[in-house]
Length: 200
Image 1 (cartoon, one colour):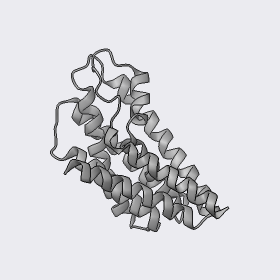
Image 2: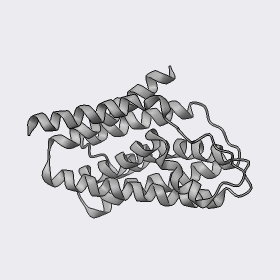
Image 3: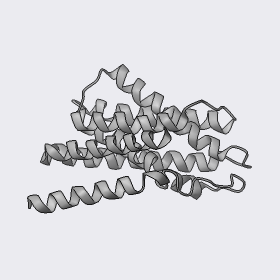
């Protein structure tokens, strides 16, 4: 059983590290005519966005001491992601967007691995800042299109779904395993570190 678990971990790590150079496959889209479905699929096509959004839900479930705390980070992330996307859609550009997205993976991975419990304000602040950069990246890609709001709605729905999936996985891991959260968090942090090194 232990050997089987090790093989699974190695396969996951190999997949993650082999795909890090393609952080945004399919994200170079023509914003003209982009649809709700394009927005819905958008967060699923970049490993960095996908992993970060799942990690937010995972961390919330693993570290929360109450039902209220479980939903704080996902709600803060989704809300600030929308703010960032609207800013990006309207032409706002911030420096170091890609490094900040990579840093979000590194930090969220470490938070998952350690199951760190932070004060409510700090939790909302940390995920909110990272979410703005994720949102600006998405919004900038959609800027200049005829109707950016339909894909933004799709993107928001996909984000919430990923958070819910992360929460569900986190609750299952919290009940059944001490080590798997550390493994998953560690792999997420390694992925973020790989992205950062790739950007240097």
